[in-house]
Length: 247
Image 1 (spheres, rainbow, N blue to C red):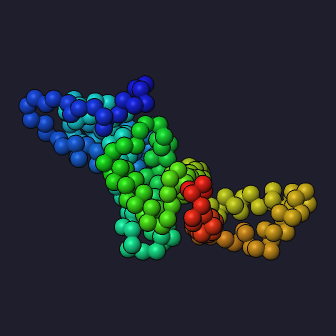
Image 2 (image 1 turned 120 degrees about the horizontal axis):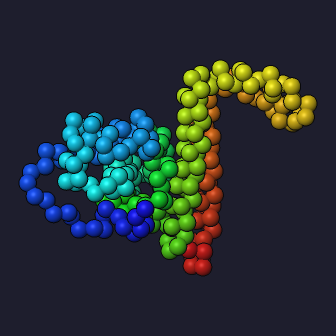
Image 3 (image 1 turned 180 degrees about the vertical axis):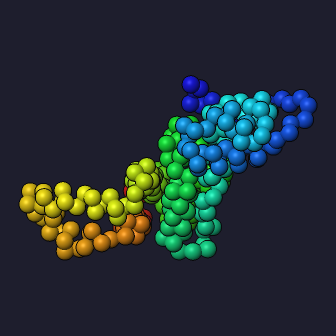
């Protein structure tokens, strides 16, 4: 396993001889397609070469190994996240756009979730997103270490929500049934144990939990959490203006 700081982005470009038949962009695009279909476990240089109709040797013109390829793929999909320019929107709207874009990206490319924090995320798309995020939060009035904490708080909510949703969706797909069908199969057990958990059972009945659309529940739960986080940050920011110890 490579050292954490041994990143494809920190190494000098590899010397080339001859003329490669594939571009790095083609390789990364094909890797993302394979990752979306089968996850990180399904990616190998051999399988990727076969997908591209080329031997694995051709891939080594641009990437040294699978770890480098994963770094390149992660940075590529991170480029799908849009962060508004400061002043284009109110700060809450700008942060929401960024957070919603990150959640959508993670749900499109669920393999990214398991790679976050494994290797440095210092590619050009990530750094560009980070720079615009800092500018957005600075313009909103967050400064010093607090700015980093604010960004971490927001991204933690996004990653947590996406991780849980992606895991449940994957489990439902593996079961070969719809979420409604699985819920219906579990309902006899829930009714049988209702007397042991009366408050929970009453809440489920009063709110029609068994009739809820799972996708809508995921969206509402995520949005509720994000809005409450932004409420808290807005209040904290207002109370901290002029108090340098809080920044």
